[in-house]
Image 1 (cartoon, rainbow, N blue to C red):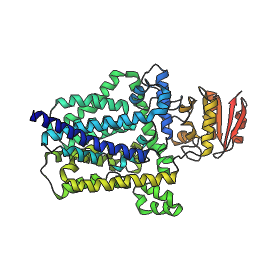
Image 2 (spheres, rainbow, N blue to C red):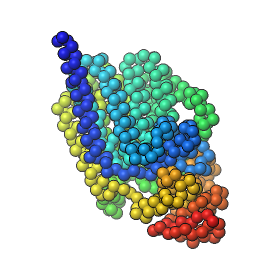
Image 3 (cartoon, rainbow, N blue to C red):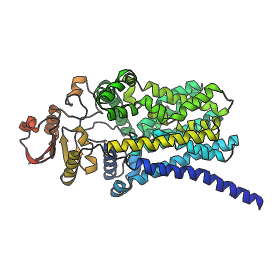
Image 4 (cartoon, helix red, strand yellow):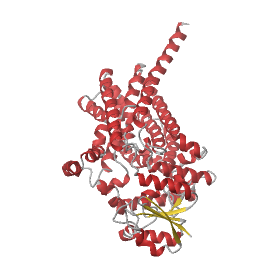
Length: 514
C-alpha cells in the first residue's frame, strides 16, 4: 500500500512540475501575444488551405497567384487543416496554434524524460527544464510569424524539434534503429517546412563531420527518395520551384527586398544603427531590436550561458556530446547572416532548433537558484519588450486606406481575378476568396532586366506599369486596382479600354471589366 502511495505521489508531483510551467506559459501568451495582429501571411495560408480544400483535399497547389509555374511552398500543414471548416479556421485559428504549442511542449517533456530515466535526476528537473524552455524571448517576438495568425512555422518547428530529439538520443545511444525513425520524421518536415528542411539539409553534413558518422547523410537522401515516390510529378515541380525561387532570391529579389531594409547585419554595428536612430528614434530602436545578432543575444540568452559553462568548466557529462547540435545551429546562423546567403532565411531562426538542447544542458550546468533568477529576468524582458512594441506599433501595420480597400474588395471580388500595382495588397486576396496575378518567383529569369521589369522603383511591393499591362493583356482580370501613391492610374488608362471606373477608395482606384 505504501509503495502504491509513493507511486501516486510521484505521478502527482510530476504532473505538477509539468503543468505549472505550462500554466505560466499560457499566461505569458495571454499578456504578450494577444496584441499581435494577423499579418498578410495569415491570408496567404488561409487561401492555400481553401484551394487545397476546393481541390478535393489534394496536396500541391500554387501559393498566392494563378500564374505560378511551379510549386513553391510545403503544404502538409495546409492539407491537414483543409479538413476543417474554413469559417471556423478564420475565427478560431488561435486554437490551432495553442494545440501545436501544447504538442510541442508535450514532446519536449517526453524528450526530457529520457534524461530523467538515464541520469536519474530528481523530479524537480522537469519543473526547471520547462521553465527554461518556455522563457526564450525569441519564441514571443512580435516579428516571429508563428505568433501572428495562421502560420506553418509553429508546425514546422514542432516536427523539426522531434527530429532533433531523435538525433540527440541517437548521438548518445548510437542505436542504428533510430535512423529508421528519423527518416519519416524528416520527410514530414520536407512536406511541411522550408526552414525546418533547410536546417536538416544544411545541418546534417556538419553533424556527420562533427560526430564522424557518415550514416547521418543517409537521412536527407532517403527523404528525397520518399518524397519522389509519394508525389512524383508534384515533387519535380516543387524541386524546380525551390531551385528557381532560391536562385531568383539570391540574384535579384534580395537586393530589392531584405537588403533594401537592412543592407548588412554587421555594417549595422559600424554605422547603420546610428543612421536609423538619427532619422527616427522609435523606428531606429526597432531596427536594432530586429538585427539578427541582437536577436541572438536577447532572444536566445541561455545559449551563451551554456557555452560559457562548458568553456569554463568542461564537465564530464555525457550530455555535453549534444553540443554538436548547438554548434550546428550557430554555424547555420553565421553562414546565413552574410549578404549573399540571407536568401536562405532569417539567421536567428536556425537558433530556434537548438532551444530544446540548450534547455537540457543549462539544467545540468546551473543550480536551481541561478535558473530561477535568469528565467525571471527573461520573463520580464519578454513582457516589457512586447508591451512597449505593441504600444508604439498600435497593434496593426495596415493603413486605414488599405483596410477600406480590403473591405471593399471583400464585397465584390470573391471568386474574381484581381491585378494591382500594389503587390502587398495582393497578398490579402486569398483571404477574400479572390484570385490574383503577381510576379512569379518560381520560374527562370535569364537576367536581372527580365526580373526587375515587373517592379517599380526597384521595390518588391510595387508592380511596374509594364508588369500591370502584361498581366492585363495576358489574363484579362475582373478587377484592376491602382494605388495612386505608387503611380497614377492615368499612366495606364490607355490599356483599360475594356474596363470601366468602379470607385475610388482613399488612395486606391478600382476598375472592373466591362
